[in-house]
Image (tube, rainbow, N blue to C red; front, side, top):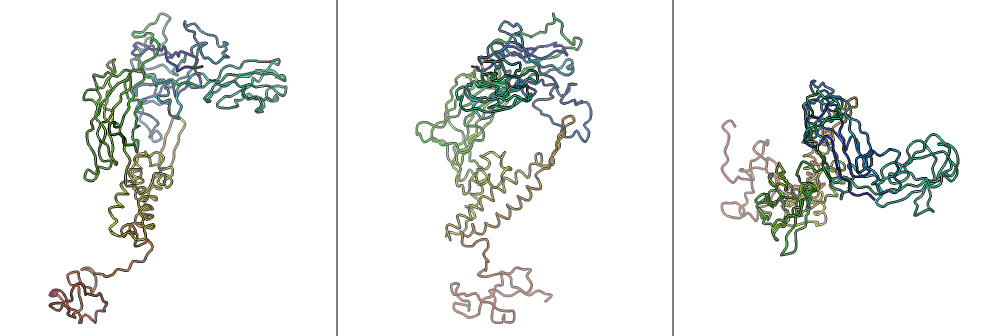
Amino acid sequence: MATVPHIIDVYPAPGSTGIAIGDSITVEFDQEMDENSINSGTFVLIAPDTGVVFGAELNPFEEPGLDDQDILSSPYYGGFVKATISFSRVNASGGVVSDSEVDYDGEGDLWRTVAILTPSQPLSPNKQYSVLVAGDEDPTNQFDSGVRTRTVFDAEPVTVTGTGDLEFTGGYTGTVEKTYVLEITTIGATGTATYQWWDSVDPLTVFDGTTTTGLRELTNGLCVSFDPDGTFALGDRWQVVCVPFESLANTYRWSFYTGSGAVVTPTSTYSASGISELGASLAPDTFEVIDITPVGRKYGVAISEDPYVGESITIEFTTGDVIDETTLTNAISVRAEPANGDTLTISYTGDLDFTSSVSGNELTILLDPGQLYENNIVIITLDKDIANTDGTTLGTEYVSYFSTTYTPLYSGIRRIQLDLGPLATDIPEESIMLAILEASLYAQAITFSTTTYQQTFFYHARREFTTCMAEKQLVGALLSDGLALNKMYKKLGDLSVSRDGLKGQLRDNFKRLENCVNYWKIAVETGGEISPDASIKPGYSVKGDWAVDAITVSRQWEPMTAIGGNGIPAANTRVARTSDSSERRQYRTFRTRSWRSDD
């Protein structure tokens, strides 16, 4: 059974100088590895941007042409050196193990896998290069990545009388160890002979197939292929052990420097300063946060109900490191603020009181109870000078945040995701919930009616208004992102990929959502008294200064029939009435009329 793999030796070693420009890079693991998992995506040589060998046959000294715009690149990686990867096997003493050696039992300890990366062209002289070996930094999540241990072992002959042969390969993805059996059921050459296969613990459930020289997946990543030569006999049987994989527990990166170029390929007596055996494992040359709980941008973290114990934050640093507790003094800040910045109506504490403790590479921050409220965002900041016991610091300030639950919420995240579909895929949950909160607060603010009419309809109108308002905010944010939504064109060597942007679609959606907001707004404002499709007849109307043949606000007319003093009816007895212009003699104004000089 495989154990968590480690890198036990590399060449060139970290910090090595004077490395020959035609040399290869080797990485030795402590056990048998899945060679399919060690590829151009997990084992790479990274060149400086000014290196001659850069990307996919791209010369960085040339001015990019029109077709080279937006070339595929990454500021983190710099340039990838084009290279091939091969493998060898060594024993614990460093001796070469023959490729004919087989492993049937699935322990994975008969040899150590050595991966060899050979650049396609000589490296640039007097340059710094970096090697990256990718692992799975979070084996607890559902995404399996990086270099992993061997999972499919050699085909063990059980009963073989024919001259045909086969090979089991692939990457087994099952979670328990299995032994699978394959038996020939029809004699003949590859392409004619047929077979059955089954799980050794369930021999009554069998599956059929026809021999082929191509790879054919049987189950859970286990593949089989048959040699083109030879003939299979009836009853020929093989079995193979498959075990769950273990991933390299971290991503490792180290650097070395090439020499002047005078030495292209090292001789047998060649040596370079700084090369040494790394021991049991290769420690990364960086100290950084690799995990935090609650995770960054997490929404709806529960507020502790224990009056004596507050909320807890756990931060995990690079595997294998030990935190230097002396560097934590005044280096941790935890602050709670209103999620939407409203400091007038939302309760918040500000700087939070806490205690911290360290266990190896794990930092635990325990907040004092009673400091968090609904609608809070909690911001954790770590100073750049926090270090491990080797003296390596974070180097840059680390910031993460999470939120408590939000209220009021008159819509929900599932409704937003249903409406926006793929547009909402990459929007964090917290951002969607904040948009719903903002829209809900606005809906609450514009409900001017103190009486709720048709309560069920009002709640429905408020939900629709809130949903459209929140979606409008999110689409508006996407619409302003010019980087991701214009027409995109990428080129890598002879391969080019392009697609239309989403701005046109987003503009249409934004306009639709504006109309939706306006459609439901009147119903929310009136407490559900007026529906969006109702015809609204005003109780009275006053025309403005520029209306033709109309009175102004300051010259509104009322009947002359006197009820109160000065011949003006009391306010509670005034009755609106209509009249055409010929009947104005029946009215008088509240104030003296002012005539224009040109009338």
